[in-house]
Length: 106
Image (cartoon, rainbow, N blue to C red; front, side, top):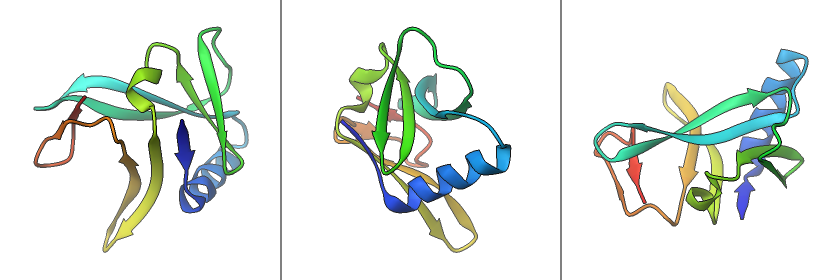
């Protein structure tokens, strides 16, 4: 359902190690931008009762059950282009993405 590339998994593990604690990263969406939704990542120290944990490439991606519908088939990658670097989301459910890449629509 959700896959994490080797590069993204190494970056997630590295950041969790730097923090010194955490069980994984939480993936969610928030309403924003011209297309409506944006991806949100945050560290997770404790699981909630409505969480689903997806293991991929040795890291845990935690998603609340209401958000799962947005992430079926999602691939999380980590890209570096020039001076810019960050997580990239390849989502087959996206119907549209704004020109600046800030938000998407399903």
